[in-house]
Image (cartoon, rainbow, N blue to C red; front, side, top):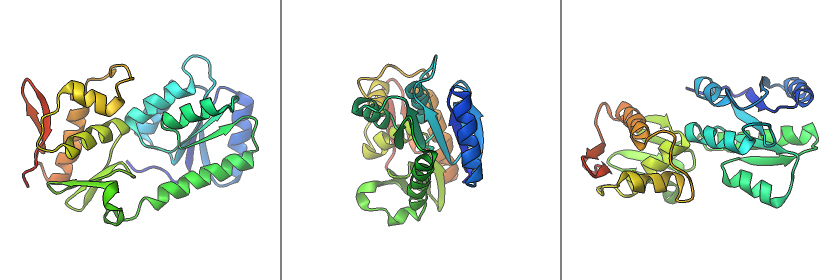
Length: 237
């Protein structure tokens, strides 16, 4: 599903700040949907992707980094994080977790607008033809082209967007095409050894990847199940 290029999702528990930012952003040409917490934002992103998400870190209950982690399992949507703490450690944590930019409170709304526009320009600059990407930015196997910058896969002149988890799994499989990878190996490649186990199984993500890749290839199955072992990306054309 394509994102709206003017829709922003604002996730912050401060009602006064949401009111201020919503008015300011609308005055500057954006549509804004407000969320007082992160409980429903991931579902909203999946069903109606925005151009970007503005996400507060310091929220009661599930904090912004936890919400960001859930977002990144499902979407590569640009995320600008807000926080009352501006220490390097917090900023680095946010960026390492997958944020695209980071703005400490208090801030001038004009700076937030500038950062949002900068993030959107970077996103738009990646929407040119995948074939223009440098070789190091792409992986090509058996007619499939994986774009690392844009987190997309192309085949047969068509393109599919991938969630972050789907992208990492497909990257692991394509860069090791012809080699069987166990579920534990795929878990390490997709989430890293320092992360806990998935709340959804590897098999569910592989199933979603199959749907997307088969839609590109006209039904050809490129991800093979090796019973008792794991999965393999087949190299045959």
